[in-house]
Length: 71
Image (cartoon, rainbow, N blue to C red; front, side, top):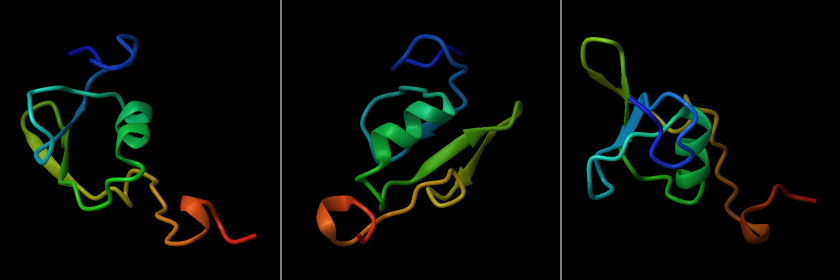
């Protein structure tokens, strides 16, 4: 599967919360979900999709300062 955002990476991730059947590579799923911390993301294992937390994908959600780390 090809990433439907960049058309370069392998589309191993999809979001159950977002509408549609889009698949994304790791960098694109992180980019598209940086400000959607409550969405439910899954990763293709080669046999099935398994739940992945956005934290496991490397997303850090900053609550203040416009989504940026504290100065």
